[in-house]
Image 1 (cartoon, rainbow, N blue to C red):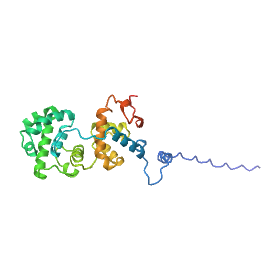
Image 2: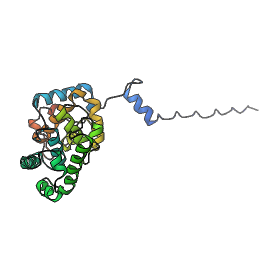
Image 3: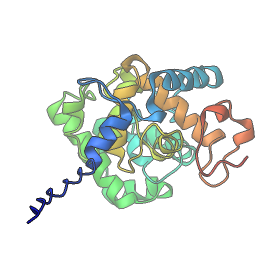
Image 4: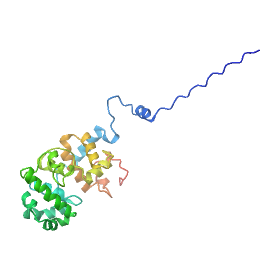
Amino acid sequence: MAMKSKKKPPKKKKSAPTKARAAKSAKGVKAGKPAHAAGTEPKRVAEILAKLDEAYPNATCELKHENAFQLLVSTILSAQCTDVRVNQVAETLYKKYPDAKAFAYATPSELQQDIRPTGFFRNKTKSVMGASKAILEKFGGQVPRTMEEILTLPGVARKTGNVVLGTAYGIASGVVVDTHVLRLSNRLDLSRSEDPKKVEQDLMKIIPQDKWIQFSHQLIWHGRRVCHARKPKCLECNMESLCYAKDKTL
């Protein structure tokens, strides 16, 4: 009788590569060297900074002020309000309240009416008076010069702290992320987050520290003058060739 041939066991199929392995293979990134997203490649970031320098060499804070304290108050008042409106209010406000002591011991109802045009005047009154009292009681009447200390003032978050430290004292403690910086950082693909804190951290990683202060001013100026929220003036933008935002108007 003929011997029955033994059937060979079926070959095991090779498992498909995992998503993680596939992604790693596709990137071809060397171990220990993090990959840059397309929008944050150092060369592209440098080109954006150069274009901003070209367009806005003298950009600065547009809140009118004579000292760090006035800038602090104006920045608090600028929440959900335009700088133009704050500057209009400030023309008479700082004549009536010339220093921290005057604000700290103001009549709340009266101060509310004085700053009413800036909106949210009740909360802003509490913040301004609270910050003024803290400056008098804890910091000898002077606006503190560190982020850690300035954040202890009522009504002051990182945006306000960065504005005051950067503009009044020239201290690069971070990047100011207001509505314009948030919008443009996303349009220029410098950050893909909608959280101002996360956007600031993203920008601090790719922008040289000696450019943090000026970069904030320049991006705010660009947002107000060219890169508007609804109808950006892309034909007037010197960064148009570097921008691939979905809502470009070209």
